Image (cartoon, rainbow, N blue to C red; front, side, top):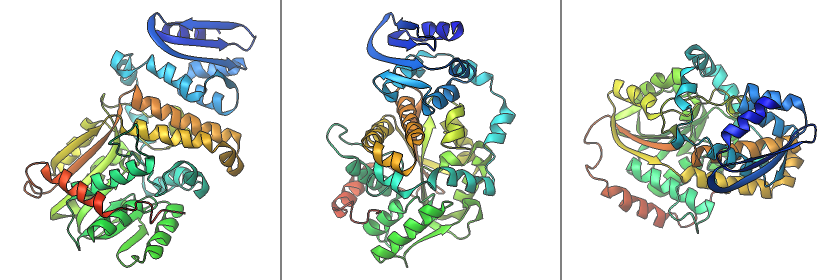
Length: 417
């Protein structure tokens, strides 16, 4: 494949890539820049080569899933690390030129995410087998970026417990307050907030599987009267809440609905209330969800730039009282998930099949490279309706966070089974 050969020769500026073509010939692409990244692959048919040229993410992802791209040195994480490192964001490899060619109307259609489509999108990813999530998540099933204070030595369980304490501290909770958890997952955050801060929580989700698990956990913990879970679209909510938290849900809202989302936050938040939105984001400005991820993992999903969020915060006259950018925390989290996925290969293939296992590995490996080498990060945006709703310095955060950590001495006690 002459065109693909030219692409690889232009692409590999650091490290070494070996490609065995469908006719058995082998090409070696050695970068001139220093670097020890390396990988070797075999492309089994010409159709895959053309598919990569037409749509790199979709062609490569489907080729790997179907076994038409075979890794012969390392694994898919090692291959994608080599490729994405050579297109890393800091080098400015055509990101904005590519963005300029995107069609605005197409982006709007793909992310329109009305109530019915939102339910289907959520079911596509979150209504998978319970067994799958048990195999690679922490015991509390926190399916979002952890908070790593010592990445070299702490466990995933500890980092996820620290994430909950970090977010709870930013909410500045008081006993008896009403808290809304938008996109509550399997209930871990809601149960945690009730446990450490003595608050009442309403968690909402569009996933039937998550709802069933969350309700069961509340019953088992004996707090179902104070921690309730409902299947409700955030746009259909009523009532007022002292605190609002949303962790890992905003990525599914879609750009056409950002205004409506922050309308809900502003309208449902008490006058002296506080909200915290935790979302994957982009440091490099507006972008595009790649075709493979949109098709196989998160249909309708998009990770926003801060510049796409803030106009809606401003329009609703909300104070952005604190914005924290987590630059590497999700890379560490994804690496832990990837390692657990690889270790559980036989179990995952028993639940699904080898193609699904390869798909899941491609998903996690590509996400790792996005946070290691592309412009992906996490935003934690603290919001309030009144400028004096929170202390005027950040000292309270460390103090409150340490107190919650001390209270929650057994972070696995209410883990999902």
